[in-house]
Image 1: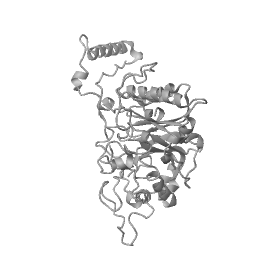
Image 2: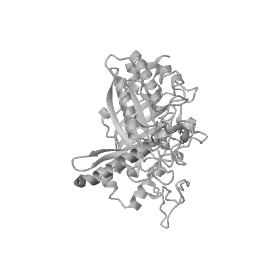
Image 3: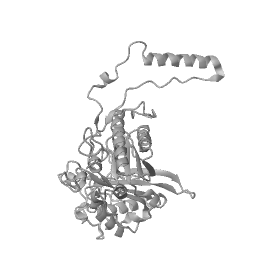
Image 4: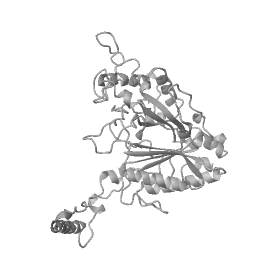
Length: 437
């Protein structure tokens, strides 16, 4: 669970955030009241009537008036753009709700069916991200909500290229990830021909998109696996902060920033890169990492901090300072021991300890209930982004595999690697340059 992506967190100084308002009009223009009896007056009358009836009825009790109508909040109004240089859902800040879903193409479906499916998915995603209904057989689940920072992102797994006869276009970066000693992977919940990432700041908006994507698949593809995640809701803290994970640790401090000089080089395939259809795209490593919370919570706070290498309260390195203070790896205590232990997670994952390897971590927490013995099935839906996983994720995970203090408290249970092409221009669909090239 590399700290770096040196990918997480709702827009804090460490987190990229590129959300923009759904409209330039002022709120007073968006929510101008209609003529006639106002909703406030109507609700007030209904409330008063209900109160009188409750009093007259004695044992019937009081009737509660409906909640007053309020304008669309900034959380609901925030909108990410579907069309652009890069696909959405990579550099935006963490959303409160997420769904990851993988599909396998149906038997007999090939390149033609895949192209038609990506065309449908792209059209649906564009409408939903704008806060509009799907345009066909909409379920109305998100009827009352704004865009709510919805993002929908599409990727291709290694097997997709065999199924569509496009093996010659398969990137070498999609070579299988190596085996790691901490892996206990469930193959039924790993990999897949197609991958979709959905995120939103409203649970109903996110589910609406999930259901629309699944319905759009029709007979062309079937669900292979699906996972649900969450993060802190925007506005739940007094100030923007890096997110915490289910271990209670601030998670994502070392994420690269969009303002870093080498950010695009580390995260995105260059416009002149190979293969050409991946220009401005990225690669997503997806891991379901179970946290062994019963064992973790037996540790004292100081022991937990030693495992991570950072203060639990504020994310500051054990060598001193604040969350953003550079970690002093050479600082020792009075006994000559490193204050940041040699096997601390934060020490091992630093880019300068891994040949500059960097990735953008953008995960979701998950909780899927409890085992029969009461053990929580909870942890992290780890999603990290990089221009090349062989230079980003793999070297860091190999090093973690050899001696990370956190390894005894986590278990990697599912895995996937997906090629995520660049964004679709207006009038295009995602993957068009691959499927029609």
